[in-house]
Image 1: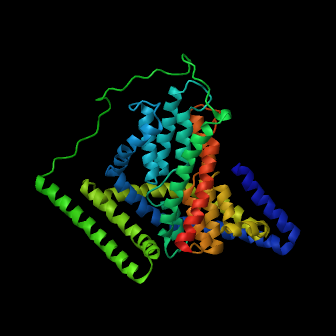
Image 2: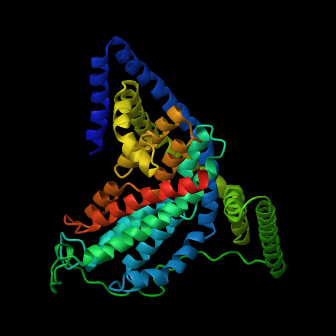
Length: 441
């Protein structure tokens, strides 16, 4: 699908430019070189931001924050997946996948997701058809509520010289919460339809592998921490407590002052936008300090991961950014926008963001290129740029996730997984629009 979209953008741009004349054709050719150079410059600017904030996330990872979130998710997953034994490997893999998504670590979530699907396949009595647990897991994974900021999107905004790269955090959190709730609801309601109802299970299917509960002591190879003096532990706890109280006091003071000058909603919005990032930074550093993490070494290790990510996205970003720039320079994009704008503007949606809404479910790298091109045309801090950024962080690459995860389980019939995921995407889009109008006017 992405191949077809790219081909349409490139050939369509050349065709429209050829109809327009030599001047339009020259503009398209100039756009190829300009956008290719801009894509590389964007990645260079992105590296520094990614090194720092992926290093910060590595501190949280090394401190065991993902394990803490996984334990908190266990009661929820047991209710969502009652047919999966609590000590089955599939349950553990699903919990770790969800915890990684909550922390915004999509790359770390993928291996756990593939492991979960392969383990769920062992409990599925219908080879080739997705079980209820598979469909629900895919719906949750594709909508992926994210508590922490979308660091990749924020990094691109910072590289594009945004005055407030972190402004999209709160609307993105709201949009992901809505999309996850909608995807789960769609799974429940669509599952009741006869066309999507799961066939009765057939015991004795030779494709089902036997499974025994694991030994409680098996695989317990975690190295214990070095002993620590009691006084050092108390000093560490006291430092963390004082730091937390200081941040809370400053936030309350800011909110009280803002409330006196403005209304409650304006004060709440201002406080969230001003203190979300500082609170996150202090919380992660204090948590790592409390868990005796070598924060400097963890930051460096996370920075190495960021360099690898930046190296991988360069060709994807250049290719898609050039195609979109050609499509815009030829005037074809203006024709499409002019046709759609009377309809989308009534809903508060600028037509310029529709390319992002269409390509985001297909490709993360493609959507990154589209977002970067929109920043070049409209700026990262315009309403179009803010809405585009929020859409980037609030939805997932649905078709990619379905293809990879169902393939890992050997499933060709996803039942209502696609519809549940797409309903989550549409809801996330609508929630992103509403959130941006609330926070940015």
